[in-house]
Image (cartoon, rainbow, N blue to C red; front, side):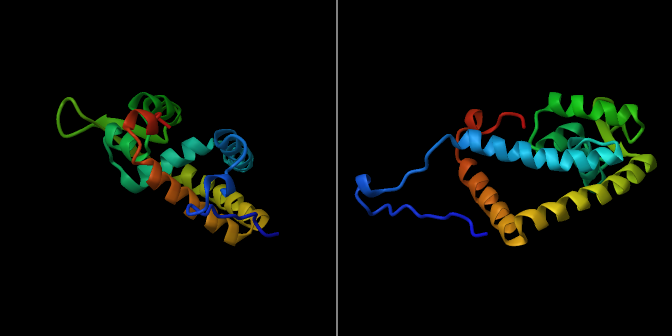
Length: 166
């Protein structure tokens, strides 16, 4: 199945330009709900939410790390990070320990957290492979490129418009 593609000829008179129809936000949210549900169903088999898997993966890769730095890397606000870390701390998968000085804290992944992340990675990979199979690898790569390009262009927006703590 071939994707519908078109280009806008910016040199064409305004009356001849083809413009997108419908709400881009709505369409993107529809796509995100479908993709998120696909991953959520598979990840639930590991007992993790996709956000928890992402947090464990980032802490494994970057940790020990200050919560503020982790929030910046994950492009979320500090209160969202704190709220999302709480279940991982309660489960014993990460710890929040003293940092270099009395005011700083560091997020560490525990051995149990490493094991949980490894288990969840198998489910994440199954979800990823199934999505690649359903959409086709070329479409997934094109989608990744389109998202990356769009994020780079949107980064030029003023911070209050572009950053909503997600």
